[in-house]
Length: 279
Length: 279
Image (cartoon, rainbow over all chains, first blue to last red; front, top):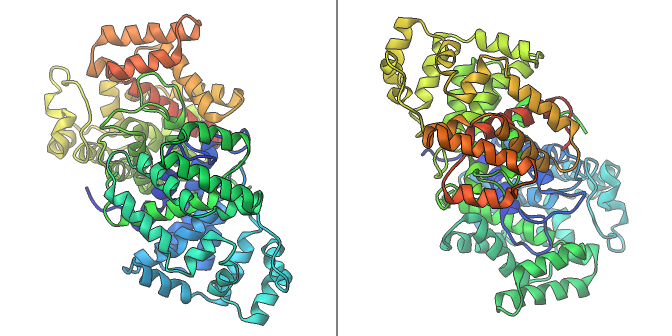
């Protein structure tokens, strides 16, 4: 068996992430929403491939990400993997460059430019992403302005790393960008240490991550109180006090999707695949 | 939403095929074997992409197929999508050439060469495929000989179409090759006429195809009697006399996988996607 190319491991990570079940609140192999279905995630992963290929070929991270998002958005379910691709794109670039480690990834994201930031903003024009209002003073950089914010980015000379840094305290993916993808690399170790079907391990690691920190996507779409409840309930599952499948069904009913945690699992699956996780 | 490129539709067809549930006897979203899991089909679809890309770019069908199989085989579950790729590769070439119809596909497969046949034989070296002993007189062309059979192919000037013709009476995929992909195109119409999640439609069409003809992969791995039982039981599900999920569990227990029928569904999903099936 030959080694799987970097972009293929990234595409496979997207597919394995959504295949893990149960993953309370998120679409998985056994649960979906009427308008956001398992098949939309399949199509999103298929469409993202060309952008992942660009990142693996050494193209700048911002344009590669924008291409991935444009392709991911070519299905009718809406936003399926925006955050996961924001985690994966720099990791793909890092792996293709032969330096897949926290410090390697940190170096790669710190090398991003204002042009990468511009492409990141353009990516928001391809798909609706749930985001909060920006903090005071950052209204001109509201991502919902899309390319309309690019002159302001240039004016302030903000790189994509700078953009991530500005929201690291409220967004779990941005927090990964500025911490050497700490949670991603840690979770990848747990995937590698596990045994049995990879999809089951992904579901286990998802629960552990969910119990460890409030999911910022839940904070954005609902509120901090709900995110804290989600965290506690995930811990209850780990403690054996609550059933994961029942919790999954309740969260789907309440439309609670801990999407940021899923994004981190996708990144962890990619790192683990690159480090020899066998599928 | 821009149109999805041909190779992406083919990759998506592979993913949607395995996502349909229940599909009695085959791996699907809710049922798998210990050594042949859902995740192996994900990885097979990821690995096959480079071969599908070749077919879409106009490379000859045989080498494109061999590349797809080599990539598909890069996972630890063994043969996941050999037959499906044998259906998809000529259809991708036909679609990329702008003539996706039974007569267009028929013309494409009749244009195959001895070199395409040689590549088809080489493909068997990448993965173990369950096949029957060849008929009397065709021992030198036993596919299990892999590239060892190539001199004999050249001696007899057999094209890949000729190879398919020689087994069309015992292999359901070969039968498609020599009939303008009749069952594939018919099933694609039923997918397009249906409504609701595409994965559910794929499962419905799978059952209809299974009830219509004995699955040749079941004939090969078990026997004709079992294949006829499978056909009758599928009809019983359609008639409401048997439960699809129970049947799926029984077939998995008995290791009965109607793989040829799944291959035809994959082809039908591709044709339907090319003709506007919305995912």
